Amino acid sequence: MRALGFVKRNSRGFTQASALVTLYKTLVQLILEYASVMWSPSYNCHTQQIERVFRAFLRFLAHKLSIPHENIDYHELARRFNLLFPHNRRSCSDVSFLHGLLSGRIDAPDLLARVGFLVPRLTSRSATPFAVPFSSTNYLYNRPMCHIPRLVNFFSTSPPFIDIVKGILLYTFLN
Image (cartoon, rainbow, N blue to C red; front, side, top):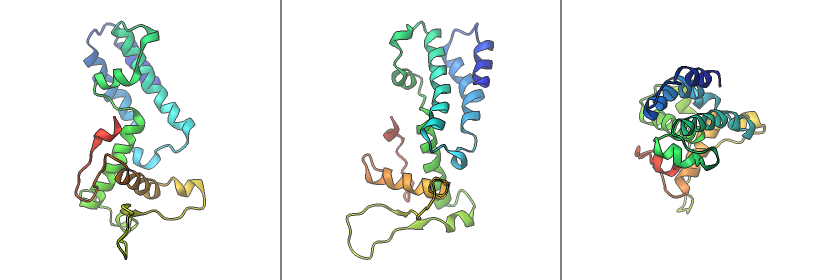
């Protein structure tokens, strides 16, 4: 919120919304998403704190565009300026991280060894490509190497499908 306040204070004279979006992306969004693969929030209260910053920026943007406070449609405003909500951007980062790990772009053999593949012995209807290890606590359940395969399994079994192995990442599922 402090970074967003800095942007608001120092852009009072700005009239172009694209300049404000650029400032938000470079000064605020980078802080919100730094190393999000490792710390991605799992509880709603933490996710809502991050979303609150994004919505505050969208309200500021609507104010600059003279949109009445009662008529703000956050999804439409975000779509208009080609912005994704923070939880969607974190999902994209997680899927991209796993793809980079599998494709060799990210050189981390220890992490790659922890990725479990599900290879069915018999013909099965299950299309989940990754094994998710059992976790006895919330801390273990939400660690990156459990959370990311679970996320990819979800996106690979629900339309529109993504194929992480071939490198086909469809970001349209987030809109």
